[in-house]
Image (cartoon, rainbow, N blue to C red):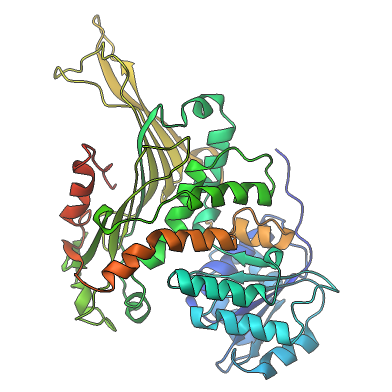
Length: 477
């Protein structure tokens, strides 16, 4: 297997360096890259936040979240802190005097700062690439609807080129997500059946056991639809549905993904379900009603669950429904893609109960146990031909040493080497918002989410969404 090249020397300037994202995910991911030998010695982290602090205080904060500290001492020597206000030009003027060479600006801040920070970077000349590359990583949510996403794209692209902008989606750093391309285009068997002739329907699930917790103020103004669908779930949808790219270049792959999202018609409200968790139990832990969570408006209409029926109007997928669902406070943490194949054309083998064998399914497990399962039929031992369902399993952890990964390692490495394959382009972002805009408009005017018990699989209406088509969700587990 080819060893990836070492990334070029650069400085990571992280705005929001004391936040949860930096501590739990970014710093551990960078240390993992050091351990893998993929970062050039001397790669720096320059943290910027508005609170009092110094180099040692930032090192202490980040060090708490490093499990294996064997590489942390060398890394921490290149960690520095600068106090600064993201809204003030003086902060960026000071950075301009200090920064040279290759720089990655990571916006681990509230979304309200995204446009302002890019404007200030432009005004200070920090996006000029005369002495090295200058790249900007922007977290989600990228806008709150179609209009705001378009406005933010216009704002940042007035200051930087599309090649400098990395709209990050941490789901795409998962091994199984990237493995979708290999599964589809590296295996003739899969390529032959990956179309409307053989596939009946597809499910994409992102279930969480966590509640909103202390993030009520943010989540209550966002909701499950905005938080997960036009970004995470649509990115998975595009990988499942895209046509073979002409090459593995970022432009070729992102163009095919953008075509898929553009082929998703606006989703009508009758093809969508929204829910909100009510009090219940997850394991042994009692969960309060969503409206009783801290910083949540008890009279609001924010959803914590959404299920959708989505069409992809292309030659390959016409007539195949895609069912998407995501929710908080559910029965299990489970992110997966389930491909349901059509029945065999003739049932020669009744099962033990005299019915038909279940159709084949391919399950791509993204988290927590990355891998895939192919459910097929096989003959049970004995003198008679008695077929039974069996599963062919592949788990990444059983074949590879994937260690304690955050999902950001590949993405941060790709930013450094300039590979935008796993990052969203402006047209993908806007296409996702365009598809869900009818739901945002309808849900903002009337109705309330259907309650579902915390620790369950969601509201009853979600099951009915598939039952009306004679189908059913794969169990969350």
